[in-house]
Image (tube, rainbow, N blue to C red; front, top):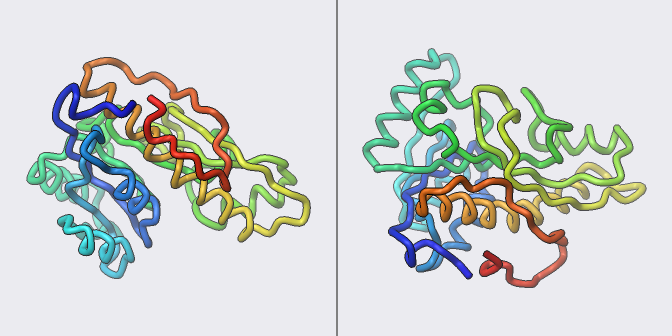
Length: 227
């Protein structure tokens, strides 16, 4: 059963994305009156990011915070200012390709989640994003891949893992085929982990890892009320 409004008001959340924001859309689509978070802000580092259109359609404020060529402290100050203005309590990174400044990580310790398109700790780190990850998985001859949701710390893809889901890599699969398969599982996994973490924060307990049944990328069963 979903938690959230039954135990307290939902946490106000910001979603960070650099591109189209399909995982932001998955979080938006999952929200209902029992959801323990409410997306109240979208942040991007790119003026032409597709996620801005999703924010506009959803009626959610958006902030563009450029990163390229700027000092990390300046970026951090801009981020903290806009997050404070929107009373943000948790942050969901959803295809955000920049390292979060340490000042922001410190302020939101264990309240920033990221989804990565591989089974961390493998195929993570600086420069490992998007199709680069799936190409590396195929080149390595892996038989399984998947998605990982983890806490964000001061390094790329090194924070504590909260939940993972796996999908097969079939012989002859191209990186594009693998990417599509993983993306489907990302859209199912991220809202479930976000619900798990936010429910625990509202209740004042440590979330711990989320033990999920294997999620098929083609499965359509509704898991919104598994907790």
